[in-house]
View (cartoon, rainbow, N blue to C red):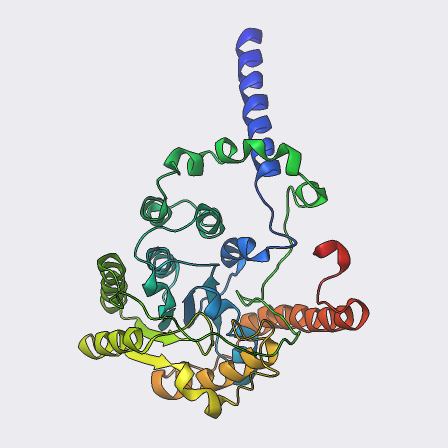
Length: 352
């Protein structure tokens, strides 16, 4: 019995040690590149969402669920990540529908330009944060570059074992917990950098979206129709990367063929009141808080008028949940504004 207990104890100690070592070596994304922490935050939200946004930075930096709640009573979440590819968006949508039943899923179409896996670092910022499920397994298999292996996603220690020399205070401070870095998936920036000298799009040899991209757009369309979820295709109102007319026409044609709504918000910049001298923080790539709230105001009215998304203000549990998010939201506005005044940046010097 003593020998058996010793063996069991040794196994438990070894497994615990490997688990702690893995958690220590995996990137925390609590400073610098915050986007890598956002996918995992979705699972902490106990509410059921009427609208779920899926896609890349053109959603998570341009739509404010807090604004949608405060002004329209829309309970929403942005399941966004950096350079989120369309197959990753599809599997996030699949997982979302299995966990809850939103009325509307909004997909940003910029990722249609990518037909093949692109970059491991961006893959990790989407895939590592997902909980294990068949959707995550399929997303990993669809996303891996030739240099990646599935086993390194199952056992991240195999991938991150060489991070010992890169460990910093964040790795120890956030070993067993993480702070929230987003507001229902929205990444906030209050600073301003006007859009000046935005480059025109260079001519392409081929403007046709690839077969793989269309394959997953078809799957996303079918998934939503089979589950009675409205799929809305959007192109965010950003100036760069350039959105070609030939790309836009393909989405217009696809939406018409599949009876979907497609909104190119580039066509409604004036109606939204977007001012590229004040409403972007990085020269036109993304909107800042002022711009995101303008877009959220415009889109919120569409979601209410055209899709019947309900106003859920007054539901006690939702009100309590959102009061906490709004408090953090306002605190972050104050923090970033103060940092701008003191340091000329929304970040404190040790956050750079």
